[in-house]
Amino acid sequence: IRAVNPNARHRKRDGQSKAFLALIVQLPCIIPGCSRKPIHPHHLKAGEAAKERGYGQRATDKHAVPLCAGHHLFDSDCVENYTKAEAELKWFAQRGVDILAISARLWISFKSGGGLEGLQNSLRKAEPHP
Image (tube, rainbow, N blue to C red; front, side, top):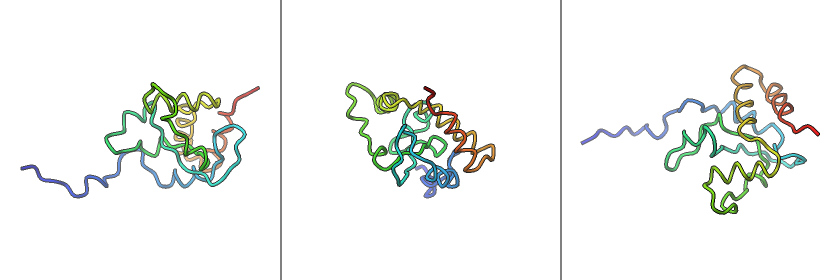
């Protein structure tokens, strides 16, 4: 008989940060031209985030990006013949957003102590140039 750890489900994983999520919801939606509020932290399904996810789990907070409530409800199932991770990448790419690069920049800025201003600057660097 294996001993069951009752706290196993609530164990903090590397990359979890309530402080990071609190900053994410203060940023604008990353979809170009969108200024809607409120902002929700969207946890990615693609890239490195896919390796962290288990059955019934989402990726850690370091893979969260800001999306308005409307865009956060996007349906990755509407992109047929793709996994959820592939559909997510395709959905963002169709809107001109490099979601993996933005996610990485936001987390690096947060970990380097940039605060809200650092995260805002990292988003500005990610904006498409005409």
